[in-house]
Image 1 (cartoon, rainbow, N blue to C red):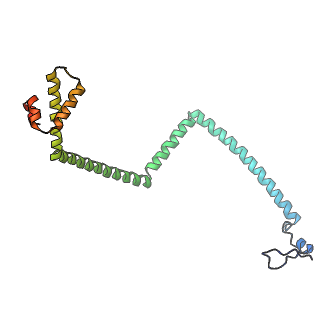
Image 2: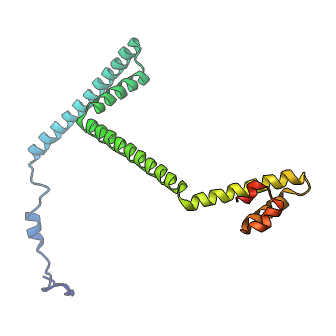
Image 3: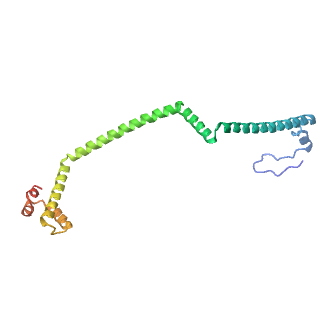
Length: 191
């Protein structure tokens, strides 16, 4: 018996086993020759049966497709029928019904939320439009537009639009009525 060099993890040296002990425990040869021949015979018979069944199945599939062809059933028609059947089965399932109801409820709630949001935004815009600061801004814009119209109309094309716009903006920026009264109309005096 030889011992092998001890490794880092081996607590004890490894010894070789006698060859006689190994031949006594041969697991592959637990069958007798008769049993082995019987199993081989059965295996051969099963392979023949499988081959026969494949031939019968191929024959039946061919006959099946011939009958469908006589009835005018094409693969596309079969696909449509299978799809329609599957769609119907899915729609009648409880999971589909519950999901559909949940989505419907969610859609209604979302629609109500958007309606509420739209109403709130409209109300805020209304409140903002009625606020004193917005009214003041609106009056200034109206006054500036009136001044521009007056200047363009009174000058009769004597100046460019940019010049008129610039002078109107300058005039509306100055809030002293004495400067505006000398050249402006009655409407301009109120601005």
